[in-house]
Image (cartoon, rainbow, N blue to C red):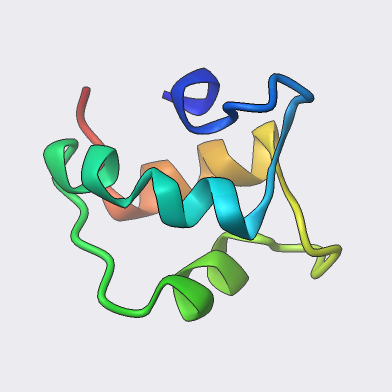
Length: 66
């Protein structure tokens, strides 16, 4: 899932990549109504990018299903 969201293939997800992935996230069972707030929840360290471990933690808490 992370690799599908990380379209830049740099092992980091930007807010733009996250917004672009909203249809995929919805298909995986998570509808995001406020992308900026949800991105901030996933970006645990507040660095402005979601790393793999942050994405994995967020995905588990949100119940993403491939």
